[in-house]
Image 1 (cartoon, each protein chain N blue to C red):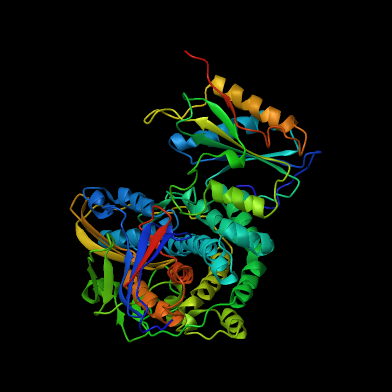
Image 2 (tube, rainbow over the protein chains, first blue to last red):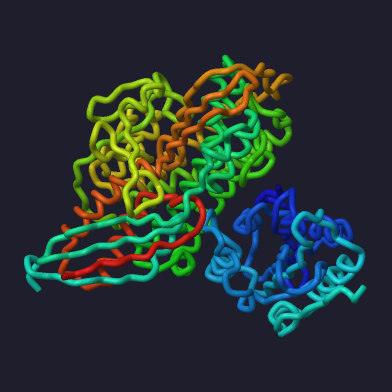
Length: 178
Length: 433
């Protein structure tokens, strides 16, 4: 796990943080798979930190600042066929996100704290990846990886404080019909 | 309005910032509380039954699933009971490292409660984010300390939520020296923050309160109790964990799917305030002095001093983790092999919310024949109802519904209840006739 003293550099849009949410096993692993893959592909960028978080509030272990940007990758359910990639601003998260259990602080609560603490004002984005049906192993297919990469690239290249991907409405990229 | 004549009904729909889902019903007749029920209506989770027929490791990993906040406590009470059956005495290294892992859980659980659940009550905010706007540095400090606790658990258990590293006789693997060095550096860097937290919490405008209650906790011959000890009270109880069932009676009440418990026929308190009340002399002298300078006297009969006890225990946990990992050397054999055998054993450790007692009976193949788990929130339920009755009456039953609801919520939250470890709100109803 990265520490609060992790090295960071910032571009014009502040430092960017890309966190996968989930756990090491099961369908909830999808956010971690995505972060691991994107982290490897974007390893050369000095203005980006990538990590896998066991719970959303672990993002506070990183030295987030007001001018930074935050992108969270998480498994989602019920938004389309498996592999669908859908991006949300915090205000667009579906009702009930993070409220299934109060153990710890969920995604919605964490983002409320990020906002209250004045962090990541250059933009916050949540990208959901539709899970496979129950019983299927979590995998990140090439098509899903490509859609994710495109989403993240758009986010990274958007100007800070602009009504770009960080603050715009939800967008969806669905896998082509088979 | 005259307290002696007030009758009626209050309905308050939601109480936030407690762990679990329940309701509070109060009926007031002629200015007095006629009935008060802390209703727990989540379906029974039947974990004890699910464990029957399971192997020992299934128990250790399975009980961690009971709670996302205190999985280590469940694992440690279970493994203590199972090792008692299997005749395993953990090595000194394992004993020390299990205590370190447990310290991580105390840190994360207590910090979560102080900063995100309880402190907003005392500072007049309706939520943690609202408090964070005014107290950003304090909230961020709390989140760092909570994260540090998670990191300790992750170091030993592979992950902080439902860790998987514990087995009979020790751990599946010993953390390597470099990861321990990195963890220790963070612990060292956070020491001043946990000390400052004690001062901050002691300075909160906590309500005055003076109640007569029984404090029950573990007590260890040498250490502040976490993973082992005898069960004691400040009213003279001093028993082996094996004798728990001779003194504690669990019983069903119609309004709760979680069992209530009485100690020798009366409600009792478990948790950080009870622990500190019973073990002040087990604190390091430096920490005891720090507490004394706060002006708050312990043992305390003010239930709201629980938040101070939590802050004290956070610093204790951080310091213990540092001391116990000094000159850390990974064990070559982090666990010993267990041979299945039949028997019955009990284990009791101090979960963040109080003593957590387990009993298991294994058959000759090492499979569970029966299991019994007595969690701290269950033990505190009768005490919470007793406290609510006294606190709301003292607060004034003639107050308006919102004020009563808020005070009732604050009293409940103060116990940091983990109501069946699943959901997150509590409804409040009061009937006035």
